[in-house]
Image (cartoon, rainbow, N blue to C red; front, top):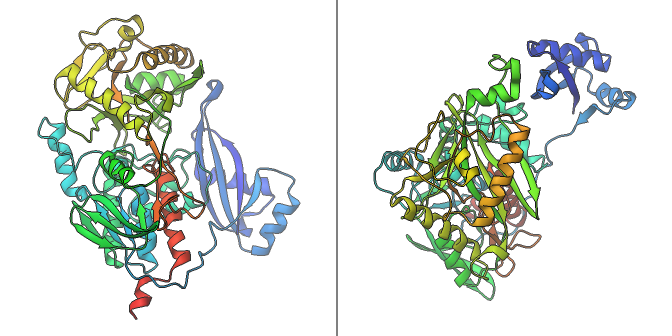
Length: 535
């Protein structure tokens, strides 16, 4: 075990060594008693106009028995023992007749396949999109005004939607597996700083390299990846999975981890028609807002803006009124707005940034919660119809893949925009100035207007007239949940394991990766490694 010492507050200029000394003092330790000291968590406290580093330090003592005794003797809530991440997963004894199949190579599928391959289960991974190199070319072509590829884009392909994002690794879940995910990412090339940052991020540029390195190791460990292979159906007998139907042919299997992401609408529709149990799920829609990052830094950091110890400023905002929430989502400091459609003749926006976060603009989604009562159809897939209606309306408004764009000042006053002000749009295909009216539902527009005014009182200049709204943002989370039992199997089809964000059990890279690990461990507990069956 180790000792964690929380709430060490130091000036911005303080070094890690200063933090270690403060931790030793807090515990009444002499330096010679400590074997190793590490920064375990680091953040910036910018409240009340004062800036400080807030750190948690991890200590390993030379006398391991003294660690527990020291914590027991210390009457402080901010000094405690750190327990191991997790206990080993018991391995099952039943033999698999066929290799397990993982559908989708986003964060959930990637980590599920990694755990299976690492433990000798030789998974077969089906990914409808292309490997990251080919996918990059397709995304770049479309972003530069070229043809749209419905099978390989910002939603589909190796790495999933998360590969073209800020690579944010924050999560609302409090699962010890989060630490395992971070260490695995670092092992495959992510910067070590993500292990202790309070709000860790990798950036699109580095994350794509990490994903590729993990995939290559999965293959080295006995896994097989089939790109350009779409799941079109399942085969089952008496409620038990026996195989899958794909664009590349049928495949027998007893266990299928379904990690298809939140935008695989055709797969949702095919599985729903075949009796897989779906439920409609709330999600949110809105638009991306862009500010000058420099102005945001001034608003949030005040006189400390520009200090070399401070990262680009970011925010999390929310307001609830009349039973609905309006909140910021997927904030990308120093980033850009990207084209994130997965179907032709639609417009969808998202945000991304590189590891350096050194772009001129900051962007985030400003979204409003919607629930099944808002959907145009009453079935389980009504949320998909709701999304499509918005996305097609946006395409019709511009007559192309250009995105509708409106200045915040005009949006709040109900006027059409004719051009930009101080903030230039970053959406790569180009924008068409006008209005979001007629694209987003009226209740969404009204709630966004209310939210922006409230947010403007929380962050100076947030509702500035020159800030830009580019939309629509419709893919905040999955519009469906594929119901599963306590053993993670689908409610009506044993052997089918819904997984990750697309199945409604995650929201972001970290929680999706953790869910992928959990789904793989379910197979580990049921079956022995596939390679043992061959021996």
